Amino acid sequence: MADEITGFGENANTENLSLDTVYDIPVQITVVLGRTSMQVNQLLKLGRGAVIELNQKVGEPIDIFVNNRLVARGEVVVVEDRIGVTMTEIIKSEKH
Image (cartoon, rainbow, N blue to C red):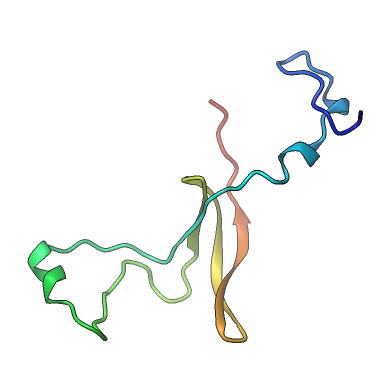
């Protein structure tokens, strides 16, 4: 069958591999708009409407993680009444 993975390792015939077998595997996507740190007493003083200043500036690329691995950078976009992200740069991972 063409949908089966037929081999593994360096000598595997990659022509017989198909991505169909992994399409339904869920992944966790995390988009980091920015970071900050504060003391617990500052955190406890926050109330509704409080503004937390992040380290990112407006217009700077944001980090996109898949399963806790940085894979891309992007920009925040608004689509109708929702916030989204458009990828502007794919990060090449180093092989281990």
